[in-house]
Amino acid sequence: MQNLTLTNKLSNFIVNWVFLMLVWIAFTSSFATHELIVGALTTMVISYLSIRLFTCCTILIFCPVKIMYMIWYLVVFLIALINSNLDVARRVLSPALPINPGIVKFKTKLTTNYSKMVLANSITLTPGTLTVDVVDDTFYVHWIDVKTTNPEEAYTEIAERFEKILLKIF
Image 1 (cartoon, rainbow, N blue to C red):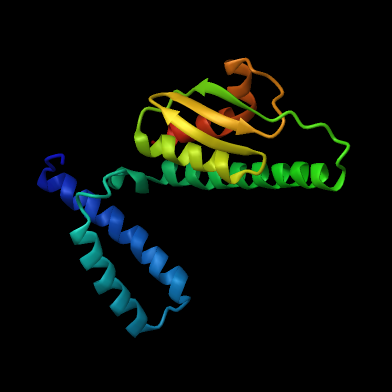
Image 2 (tube, rainbow, N blue to C red):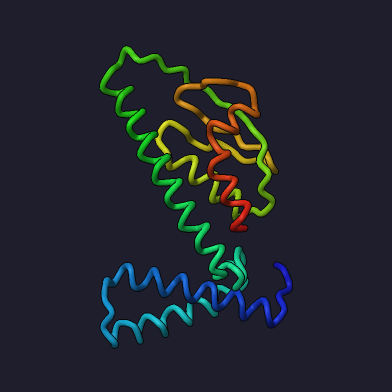
């Protein structure tokens, strides 16, 4: 376990509390006073108890520029999600379309485990690709239609659009 300073603990607490409170509001779908009070107290206790567990982000994550990049990331991800869904649907509806499944590997420029996890999940959530393993800075991805085995080209095709934004967030 890492030794956290009081400032880091407070920063982690605030970040965790805000995110948990947003999840609370999303699940309850209510802005009623009593719901918000119970949610605030519950999420504060959970945030306090999990300070050492969730240390991915500091309070700097709430910087307006980073928030804008997060929104942009969501837009880029949704576009990739729609395009890959259409591609997979086309393959399913037209079995004559050739597929060339295989595993490709590429290196990432991301340095934090959290940013690598976000990239791996983004790749996995887009149909047609599945992150099989991440070893240090190397990603192994199963691809429904391997267009290239060249690591640089595979990186450009699969991960570059996500990574460019993630580097600005984390």
